[in-house]
Length: 337
Ligand code: DCP
Ligand code: MG
Ligand code: MN
Image (cartoon, rainbow, N blue to C red):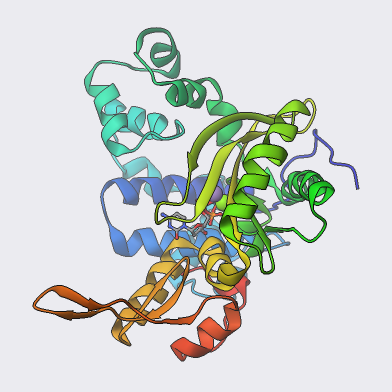
């Protein structure tokens, strides 16, 4: 199917999400962890609704949404705003930090620095601030990267990469993960896991970096590379931007995964990040270690010194990792916290 560049995001709840997101931004800044979690949960639930959630009762029927949030959803739909937002009492500096946080790669420290240094708009940053190469791209493509990617367009980008990968090796697999795999109707970026059964990381990595990525640049599909890591201890990755002809630039992440680690990697890359944290914590409590490369028995230490590295329990199969942890299988759609 063809992607329609003029199509709006398919999500009927996008306005509600937009307003709830402003609340989430506020609570994130005030480090209100409890409300941050609640708002993340409600936004994730709304992202997966194909129908508009308009009433308190409809909102209450969603998993993990309590009465107060349900009231807020109804208020937003009825009034197109949320009174609570008018009382968050933001200073102009707070609002500017929020804007600068949207620059790719800029964290709270960098965003606060820019405000402290007197920059008051994106134009200001672009024209006057000394910026790294990536920061400059982040500023110049700010409005591109701020737009959510509709599910259909995520699929289009995945298909283009898959075609290029399989032209080189038809046994290679390209799997769309991240929020897409959790069922989101639109995503912040495009997350692609690239693997091949029984292939080593070196093999996949060199094929991607020497052949596929350059080819996708030649085709005009990839626009810029923003971060690469060769495997030190991290899995290998390539972060950058891609675009369909005539369309806005999207953030795209490629994760290169050896066949033997597929299960642990897809579990990690499906997220969400809070679900990942809770799985890791659970593993710890059971004397195991979970990371994106596998589930291990804990490292044996004596007086703080490693005696024994952890022994690998499972890495290849996602379901078997749940089983080894003693947790019932949770489909990606339900991994929202
Ligand atoms: N991840 C994680 N911890 C992080 C960052 C990422 O565990 N600090 C994992 C879980 C995420 C996955 O990687 O789901 C992909 O990261 P993204 O930042 O792309 O997040 P999502 O795809 O979940 O959401 P979005 O739609 O905003 O891209
Ligand atoms: Mg993502
Ligand atoms: Mn990502």
